[in-house]
Amino acid sequence: MDMNERLLHASSFGAAAIAYDEQRPDYAQAAVRWALRPAPGPRVLDLDR
Image (tube, rainbow, N blue to C red; front, top):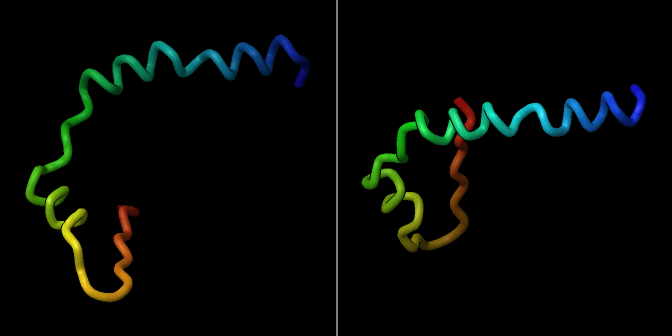
């Protein structure tokens, strides 16, 4: 892949990122509060769907 092609790929997400940000739903506030509240011991939060 040459440099021009790399730059094209690197900049291609810009317009899609704007549309994604405008349409993406916010995180549910209850879930955010739960994930951020202090807890004893280690905690793992798996965000993989």
